Amino acid sequence: MRYVAHMDVFAVPFLFDTVPSHPKPHRRTMTESRPNEPDLRVSFAGIELPNPILVASGTFAYGQEVARLYDLSVLGGLVSKTITREPRAGNPPPRIMETVGGMLNSIGLQNPGIDAFLAEYLPVLREAGCPLIVNVAGEDAEDFVALAERVGREPGIAAVELNLSCPNVAGGLDFSTKPQETEGVIRAVKQVCSLPIFAKLSPNVTSIVEVAQAAEAGGADGLSMINTVVGMAIDAKKRRPVLARGTGGLSGSAIKPVALAAVWRTSQAVKLPIIGIGGITSATDVVEFLLAGASAVQVGTANFVDPWSAPKIIDGLAAWCRDEGVDRVSDLVGAMKTNA
Ligand code: SIN
Image (cartoon, rainbow, N blue to C red; front, side, top):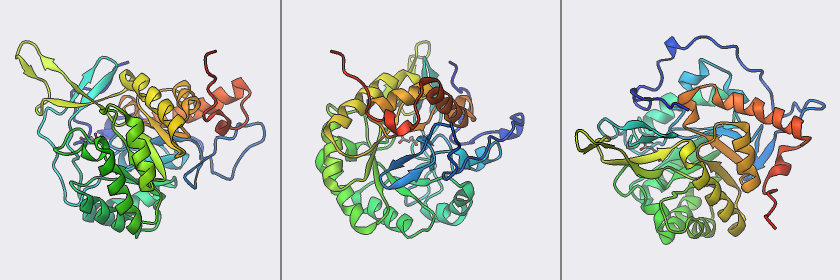
């Protein structure tokens, strides 16, 4: 599969004026469970999702571009690009690169900041018609608390996802590599925000299970896992790293086995519901994550390959369930058999 290259899709989200028109997918509402159709609805941390397929932070901007292509209400949920207290320009380019089976990014949390997000982007996002999850990141616990407090006061938001795991900024991994800090920041956020809190965890640790357990102890309502895997590309002729920052985060199909193992191990060790993330490009990938113990998934890098990926995967999941005689997709969660 070829991933998007040569264009900084994070900075200049999509040049969709050049994308051919595509029929809008059928709008399927949560209450509309048609006879003989598999029931795709899942409940996640008390949130009723119309289906288990969300779009991942940093791969869908704030929904505006893709809303011109299809009806976002078909999504199981939309996770915003990470918001910080102040606007951020991100890291200097080059900051994305295609790799075998994936892509590296070192965007560095480019975003308009919480004030602009609430004033300009959130009102439009509320129109999406699907559950909305706002992803936030801070340099310290106080930042996370301040952001969650402000987001929590806003109507129309289903949950807050704490980005504890960005590998592209100084200290970005601290809150998901040191279990005590994970627990502490979540505990502090829970005191000021009544929305469900999801902790987005890093695979760049010896034991993601320990960090997940710390998130559970801190009062998290769900886990999003995994964020990107630290990686590097080198230009042999120039004898330099390709990315200006040296390293970046690897995403896409290349990391799916890493993500599946992380979800499976974690699901055995915590009671929290898990959103699986990492290289999901098809309905079969979704089923694998559900069997491993995830209750929902986020589609990320695939959005750059094909912006219609998520609705196609949702339709594909319904077809998979029909073919396999599965009436309720929730029956697949954690249903993997063990090898005797
Ligand atoms: C970035 O903006 O650097 C990507 C976000 C992340 O890795 O969490």
